[in-house]
Length: 196
Image (cartoon, rainbow, N blue to C red; front, side, top):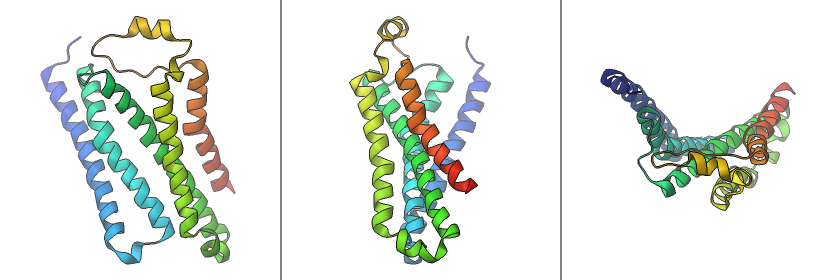
């Protein structure tokens, strides 16, 4: 099933546009917050870190995912497939964790403004950032390189494994745990905070 050349070019054009816009948009945020001292606030440090996460996603993950999606093939080898998958999981989860901690920051700013400055300090933001980066990194790289995600699914992985394929398989346990850690826990936290 080969796509027409015009369709392939159109897909590349749209996706490259999305990658470049993501890079440039996040680069503007990073430069603005880093350059202007008046933007050096706890909230903006969270936003700076999230923009860095999304910038890295646009550089490290999106271009290779674009090629894989359009070409229906992985040209970059097995090791880079694992590293790419780890970076994808890590950076997406890191971004979601940042959104969660931004909701905590906004909760205190709106619901308890008199205590906001005392509660949301630079050390608290540093803790938020440490959690936002370390847990997703340990989770993604630990899971994929320990092969915990395929325990019990080895036969399936052996059947589908072939050159030019880069897919990340999860067994039932890690499929549930990954969804819980990366989406349901931070998502539920955000919804609860914004409802309150």
